[in-house]
Image (tube, one colour):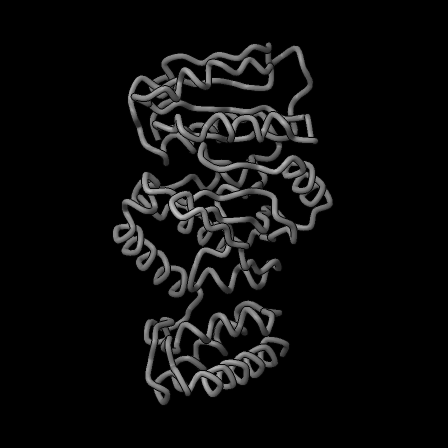
Length: 325
């Protein structure tokens, strides 16, 4: 990560940091050529019911009207940081974590929207020591089609740790966690385009507790200019590498890597995987175990679908039982 002085050309805030009490929450918003959505994203944070926060917005060398839009907001909670050139999302996120004065860091991208009680809900959850980091249920809005879908989250620490073996079970811009965790585990430049998944696996392996709040707290926007859309294959390659490393560090053999297999092979390697992961991570729910075993099955089974569902349920139930002993 670059030295702080090299990252920031111009940093401004309409408040003196020393004149107010220390904020409990720092909201992180990196921005690059985000003129279309950033005003709505900023407004959604300023409208929060929870007030004790600072809001660090970094314009990472945008060439559109992003900086002009940021400048139009004069709220005293905003800290504006302007980079002389585009240094990338990973460097920018890590920079904000270093600047943060809050006990907790809340993430939100410049193209998403937080609901008014987002910070209030997450602060209460973390202050009650239910977890070290928490996400939330959310809506996903496809900006091209206008279709909006409800997330299908798992909420317990065990389920999230387990599902990290096959996907990213937390939504990055919905996350809030203790600031020292983000400083201890910065986003890695070597994991470009799947940096969030790689971060969560590192944190999980270190033993920190995750949760997803059972309430929709953000709208996550999908659009054609999104990094995850434009670099899909590169992200998949990085994900596969990080996934293999996560399983290796859980001492799960490479032959048990979750992937579609014929019936006899998935009954052999799939069940072996299920037993091992339930022994490593106790208290995985039957629902999460079904999601795990589904990765060993083929999609589009036609008339065989009821049988594959039954197989999945049996494997999940057996594995859940194993994890209790």
